[in-house]
Amino acid sequence: MGDNISSSPLSDAGIWKAWSIVCIAEAGRQGFAPLGAAQVHVLLYLANTLASFFEVTRVRGRVLKRGAYPFYPEVQRELDRMAFSGALLIDRVDFGPRGHLAPHYSIGPVGEQICKSLLLHSEEAKRTSHLFAELIGACFGRFLESDAAIGPIDANYGNADVLEGEVVDFSEWQDENKNMQVARYLIEHLQSLRPDPRRDGVRLYCDYLDKALALQ
Amino acid sequence: MTNPVREGFGGALNAALDEVLRSPTPNISVADAGTVAAFISAWSRTLSEHARHLRTTSQALTAPVVVAYTSNMNAFSKLHGWEKHLMLGAVANNKFAGMLIAATGEIAGCVHPTAVVDTNTCEQLITASGLEATPTIALVSASKLWVWPDGINGAAAPLERQLNDASKVFNEASIATELDQFYEIHARQTQKWWKDAALRTTVENPEGEVQNDLHLFLLARNSESAWIRAEEVVGNGRADLTITPRPPFASGQSAVLELKTLRDVRTPRKPGSTPIKMSPKKNWAWACSGVQQAAGYREKHGMNLAMLCLYDFCAANSPAVSLAVDPYAKKYGVSHYRYWITLTNAEHRDERYPLNP
Image (cartoon, rainbow over all chains, first blue to last red; front, side, top):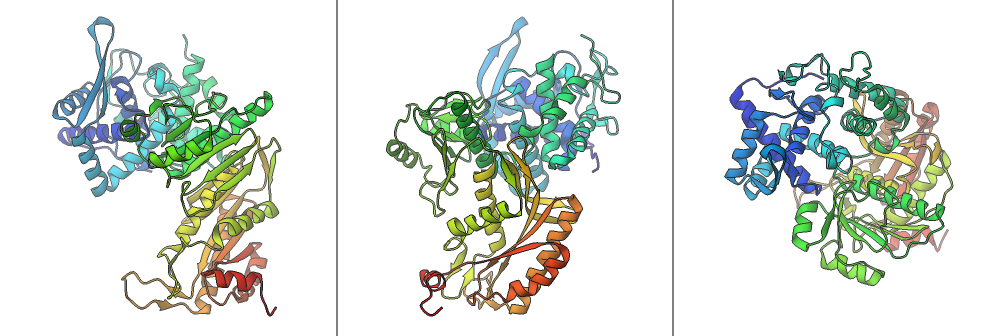
């Protein structure tokens, strides 16, 4: 199972847009949209660290390690653009401390068409949609409904080697991708239950996050 | 707070990892998220657990609970104005009585605005909302669950389950009983699997149809006591269905089920083309290959039982194929079962009630 990574900044922006649309469309299908911005960033981050389970190419993206959850400044700009172009809809905005705005996104009619077209023509997009379906099923109704603060207990983001305030591209972590290591460790130790090597990699890592948040 | 780190796992908490390893069973999957199979598995399990909670606390179910599948919950909720409950199903001891729910995933659903107290009203609301042809699960008392795999107006017969607290034991005999019941309730006189009665042609991929229907049947009946999985990648091939007992509600043996269909003619892809005849020899060879596959899957994954299920669509209803399979099945420890799929009521009657036995 290789850890492929995309290569050009232009294609990265396009892939992030496609991922965001597929993610928010799938969340809507399962009934969880509108998604708050924090939830979108957490789902995109988890998908990018666990992408290899579904043979999905990982995307370059810099995360600023500050705050309780992984946040991609460059992806946020793409989300804003898509909201203004009608691909996404902003259902409501929460006003947080220090004037922070937290938009909640759902898929717009344009985004639905883009999503359909992506899934019709690309096997990679189908695998990506499958990855998001599993992630959303595993995160919602559990921790992500109320708590997106996975940062301190996430194996990659919470790694002490990454300092607070540091900018890091976790897609560059291949052999060091701790989230994959944790997921594979759990699958290996639960072999007697015959977990699915793809779905349950994602589900067991999210199960770990849920339990870790409860223990904190 | 100091993060106690397991060596090599970055920021992961040891205690949480241990917790996952101690109690992973609810979260091991049986099907892809958002699919009908995952829906039936999850919601029949949730409602069974709710019924168990009612029984252990000596409560009765005051009104039925009905959950129907919708392929897009947000769209359904917007169209019909049902209220979304995002944590619904996360905890089995929530109050469910009187709820008519439309759901896509394993957790969350949208609920009809008024409580449903009787089954007639419920049926009308399901039909009015366009849910009459989608998988539906109803808990009607603390000891009875109904599942309509094709919806309340669908072709498949509804499955009635008596719920109790006994632990289930999976072994060859109990799985064979499940297979017999699937045959009697769902398979023997199905219209879904036939394409053209005059030509005796089946649908194009009969094994896929049989597998899907058997998978949903077994999930609906056993979701809290076993992991029933379909189309798993095993080595270089795929096991058709696997059954693994799910503790603490079951014990016993795991099994791989290999399904093969036998036909007189192969269904042509182009309408109007002449069907290609399948000789008995070809059918026998196909059936015997199932012995090899079942034995191979069992060895590869250390499962206990290998069972070959032959769904025989041929007019002759001949035991010859079983005789052909038997020596190989004995040699490799594979049990085999043949089920004749009748095309007409006349075939059914002549076989069950022969005038010249």
